[in-house]
Amino acid sequence: MTISIPKQIPAEVPRLKSRIVGAIGKAIVKLMGWRFDGEFPAEKKLMVAMAPHTSNWDFFVAMPFLMAMRIKVSYMMKKEAFIFPFKRLFIALGGLPTDRKAAGGLAKQISSAYRQHDQMWVAIMPEGTRKRVAKWKTGFLRIAYAADVPILLIAWDFPNKRICVDSLYRPTGDLDTDMQEIQRRFAKYQGCRPENQTEFEEVA
Image (cartoon, rainbow, N blue to C red; front, side, top):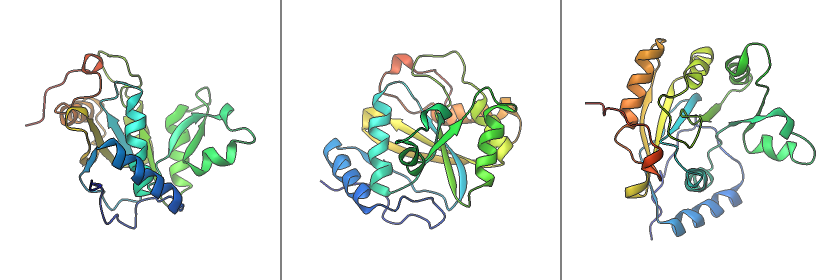
């Protein structure tokens, strides 16, 4: 079986150094039978918005692809988790220690982390939960505004066993406009558990 992942990845994309991680990822992707559609943009800093997030399986599908391509995508974790002997491991894998009670909130903390790195991609699930919600949380947009970064939309397409790079979206700064546009772009994809998925109109 041919592994469907991009053969060339722009130099701007943050990368993991370990070739062993890449080999393990490729082996898992081959066993899963999923494919990757799309190309990564040549952007040093951006937010990766992944949806529709409906199941714990989402993580186990996406992670092998990131490993196979040796792409380093950072993610938020509670600062209390960064203790010996796991601290170095979590940081190496992209973990970002966060304090939800700190002044300025997550937007200030993550935007500060962006400024401290030459290359950084941060992954966020816009729904904020695997359960069905009436509306998405605005936190991911507020972080993108504070950090002044574009948003890469990546979707799970479970019926067709695909991970899809949909598009790179550059926020306008208007919460309602940005949220509606991003939701419409994700509307054509179906997650692992459709009953947990928020329904939106597809973009024309």
